[in-house]
Image 1: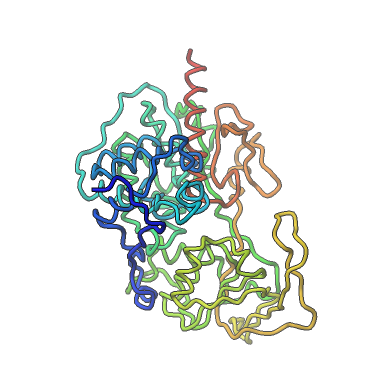
Image 2: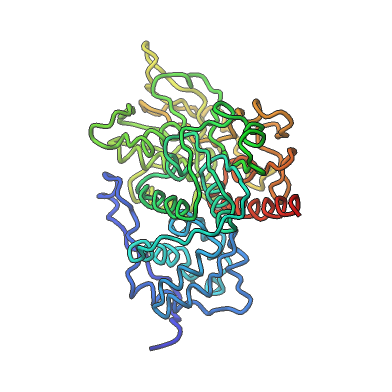
Length: 466
């Protein structure tokens, strides 16, 4: 058999038909089979300088795990990934590989990069299907660490510390662990069973999960340290406070934040027949925003039965911040893109129900501070879209509760926790990472922050007890 596969294109990902999948919540991408995974792995040149690893926020040894896949050694491949990644089945599905590992791949210079994310997903799924042994729990080192929030930053920090022998307790405000992985990302992109099994793997390492625990209400950070003996605390509370435009009519019936809409849909399973969670089943929905969250909300709305779903975004397609794959999937599922369009007001009837979205057309001017061309209103171009629901997907900021209940915790103007490159905050023994520090970002960047903080916490506790 040939050592390398020199096909310039990666193997396509098998997926559901777009006009079938836009009516169900089953996973869109179906995954590689063994033969496809092996053949795709043979496209890897096993570069000595490993540029793909430099693009990975958690430094997975990508050439090593892919070499095992090429040899048909799938469990060995999983062991390589698991050394540095606590959530491989999640990363293989939702990481923006095109701008990270695959964006650095040598094969991408004269063709398409190796399908690193697709191979990671294959390996993780293979392990879940074929391995039934519990993970070995490390011997306790006698030190306790509290992790606040069970999203990707918190779970990664908890997993890395547990592997070092720390007694880790994760405190989660909601009734299910997983943070944004369970309330924000739809079932058709990330099945919740995958998240549940990743969490179970951390429990096997000895991580304790306390749900329904709103730190700042049930307990304070000071109480965790002084009364419960936690020597360090990691804050991975995410950014769950939605932003709005401040335009007329935003308080009307039928206006949602994407955060609420996705939480009702994903976490509370409003799409299931007989669900006790109410959600508006509108016919014509406008989703305002152009990021991954906007794509998720629009695609959920279509699956919930909306006849027409619009993405309303004030810049052009070239500036859409969402992943290319998510944009293409949305188009395939008949989401309508209203680009260079900006809302200026929500039209309501006498009962305060949404009946329209007033917009103005935009054109692109000079670049702004972000480097993107600034959208400028076209005078006299106002028009009204006929919609009965508006979903605002404009980003999020951290919840102010921790700041309000933790004296001395330094935050930025918009609420992000101030932390150094190692996650150290203004408080002794308190570290932070992920969206709580950066504002809304990606799952893998949050994981990288959790990993960095875990290393710093270990050094801090060992130094204090030396």
